[in-house]
Image (cartoon, rainbow, N blue to C red; front, side):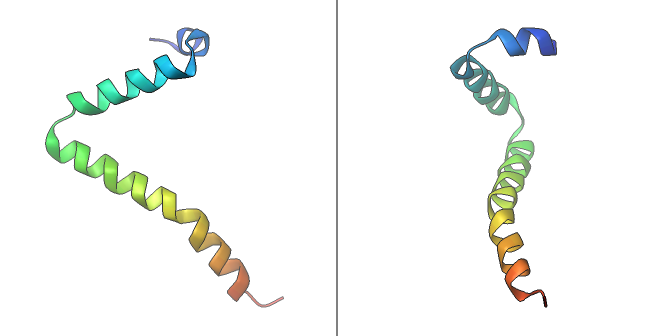
Length: 56
């Protein structure tokens, strides 16, 4: 699928494609993806904490 096709799909279809692609990955790759997503989900919290701790 190229980017033009992806732009034409509804968000639900893109989400299902992502889930299907994730489930076809080997177990160790899925674990790596999950750890990256968890790290990314915590990133804004760390950025806010760093901003509060930075001297002005």
